[in-house]
Length: 84
Image (cartoon, rainbow, N blue to C red; front, top):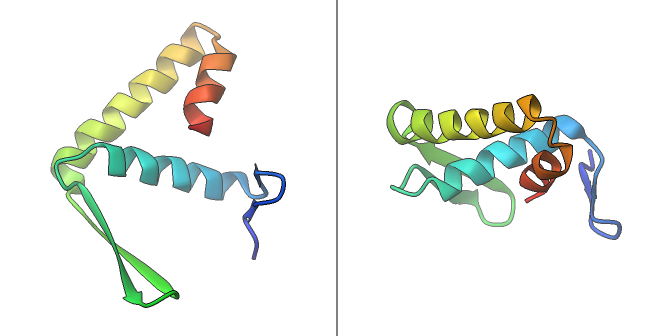
């Protein structure tokens, strides 16, 4: 199933976009929170994470940002953050 259209730079499946956003947050959290490695070259990826420590803090920050944008009705800023 195709989830992203490279030609138009558009997500075709919103739930897959949400997964990608969460992965980006995890990668940007630093502290070796998430490590992505190939199990089969060019076929499969596997993630290793520190979800109970670094992950909890990183996802908490993300949720606070979402809540702030929701409460202030700043759709443009929320969309910009989500599209990053």
